[in-house]
Image 1 (tube, helix red, strand yellow):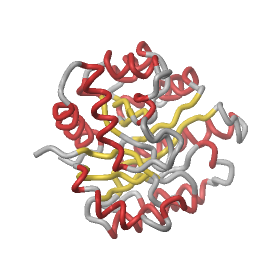
Image 2: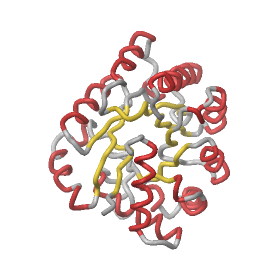
Image 3: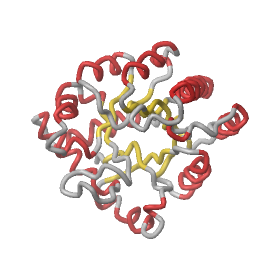
Image 4: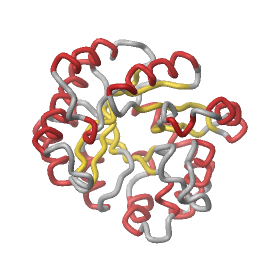
Length: 257
């Protein structure tokens, strides 16, 4: 029987300090089989590795979010590279560009995005890409570094259907989470309905971006059935089909099959 594959969460976040174990105990009953926990800053690297080793249903991605990239050095990046050979690590991420917060300087963000793309190539791992209000530069750097040879996912996708199709042509998956349930999420609904189901993976970005009816509250993987149902309705298929196909997609994305 297929189970939901949660491709992007942050369970090392302090929002889960008090009840993380209780949430994990409920995952199976809610139909969630596996989780990839994603690093974002230097402190989270070891935290994510630790969680992935403690829980058999959990894997991790190691990388530095653009907004947290200012402290990076070549030496620190080499330290992260050394940990990528761990069998619980399935990707480099989350990495990319964030022009919404627009800090640190864009040159710094671009430098470490490029460096981490090459680190992923060297480690033969896919990438988890964060891109916010930076579509053109993200695509340009991905093309410059032949990201189609690396593979991965554009997480928390927020751009147009046309651009989604370009990412898909590069062999990338599109990560869709709770935002697809929002009434005003017209562009994402178009993407969820308009690209092949073979290119979609489910995610939450927990503790952020909870779906309706929990919008504004702390998110967790327990809410993923709402995301699957929303995509199913947009596509005119069953939630079971969405769950089965996206589970297979996540296995391909993270090379677990």
